[in-house]
Length: 399
Ligand code: GAP
Image (cartoon, rainbow, N blue to C red; front, side, top):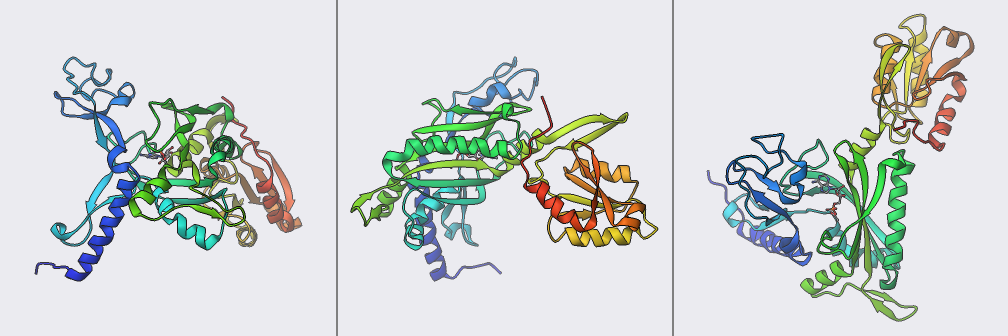
């Protein structure tokens, strides 16, 4: 039987979606969120015109597109990156909607509600983590550029005269965030955008770049969006988006400074930066030198052997520490193999329960990076792990 939609419901949904689609008109994305695209008339492939030097000609991979003997590229044209779809079970009755290409716009649209309910005074920020979707022309390099990804954005609302100062503040702060979480500072740099690179909403942008294996590439962008977004949404909705300071009688449209980070790209940078290979006692060792706060498992609890009462003590230790830090219990395979497994996933500490543990209630605590082991009383173990987790940490990895 053909599926039909309740006409009243569909009418309401359509009206709502039309209003939602207007958000992307107001934000300028429908008109300006584009990348330059070229087609090859010979092979039929499409490329980002500004990435040709990083791409391979599909027919002659030793050459860049446009440099192969048969390449025949068109002039560059603007390609809109918005993902368009139709809402509702019947395509013809549905309204056109767009998947968000950035999380920021929801924050601008919600600005008056947040202002009213939180009673904040600029400077203040609204942050959001969530999915974003872009019809990228050339996705690739593992999770560096994908069509569905996760953004972490902060819209920082400030009095108009303070935007430049806050732009500087957030640029430094965001660079520091990566260093504090263990990324080598000589693998990070700030790169200000030239005037021809700026997004349609930005008067000033700096990228935090990381030296990925593909070369220096964008990790995060910090933009001075001025009053562009609030003014455009006010214009399109007919509602004022202002801050009124009742103490001074001052009324203004706040300016916005926006640090916008990609969670996937940051994950890639943290993993690339942490990856290490070395030789230990003549054997190769692969180790992920993640900052302990980033490591998914903080401690592995390992009975030396699966007998003599050691698994029982190890289980008791595991049940105790897992209430305080993320822990894993592993009794399968040789102790050396179990250490290597944990090294590869970046677990900073390993606890081994051996025969001495049955005598004196102590265990060995092994450090992933220095490989040093010390004996710690079981009663003090969880506290010691928390202390180490809280301590400052810099990567031992060089080069
Ligand atoms: N609201 C501003 C904005 O969206 P952007 O520079 O286009 O700015 C911010 O994106 C961050 O989102 C980038 O620095 C990057 O980390 C991440 N990002 C953007 N496009 C991406 C993609 N296709 N795949 C993975 N991450 C992406």
